[in-house]
Length: 317
Image 1: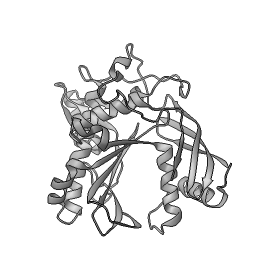
Image 2: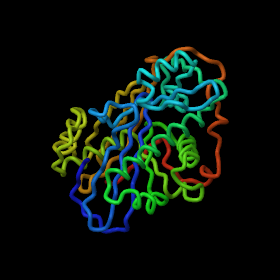
Image 3: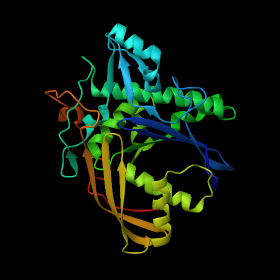
Image 4: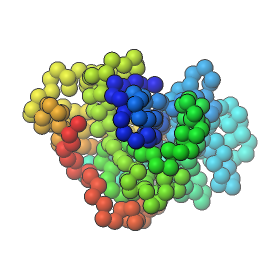
């Protein structure tokens, strides 16, 4: 749990943060009720994990049986029982499916990427829905067991909760619309409230916001080295006109974003450029007919939306 210093005086609400990565995924939430100090809880103790570890991250992968049913998800896929059953019963492991959504444009560079097959008869949308539904189900269980009167509070406030989904730099309206539709189908929000309750943040922007938060908050959280370094750079060297680069080297992708400091108080950053690289690591088996643009065709959620585009923009923190 990460504790902040700000007292919440607004209406009670739940804010849910989701990061579905190419190889690892995680969920965090903030339970805001009037007069409370804002606390961020990272969801842990996922099914299939060692009870003593309780890691907040889980593998982004699903085992499907021969009937197209999701039988093991996340950390469950790495257990000895799951591996034995997969071999004996012919289960199919769906992984690295996030890479099928990467847009093909000047800011996304494909380094000879070869995608794995999808399970027969299973679409990328169904995989996302199954995975997001699993994240929601365990998050609900974690909330109810770690928050005072958690069951009643979740029942009362989860229908109106804010859902923030992180995505790679370079993803735009089409990819956001796909994620929004998947979240709606998975039961996070109703179709009528999808535009107002589901929000998006690029992974680089999320890292910068995280560092800014930890400049002023004395947290006992173990912050990784690169985030700590970025926080120090922003705190000591940030001045109007300064330029810095955020590089996030993940399991299958590398994100780089260039920022310029437009103002220091309050801190205002302008995104100068962004690039997303995908490579061969962990990928195999080329397949004809990869993800078609029809999957990401516009829907009612995409029409008329003034979403931020891949061209970047300025944001005041």
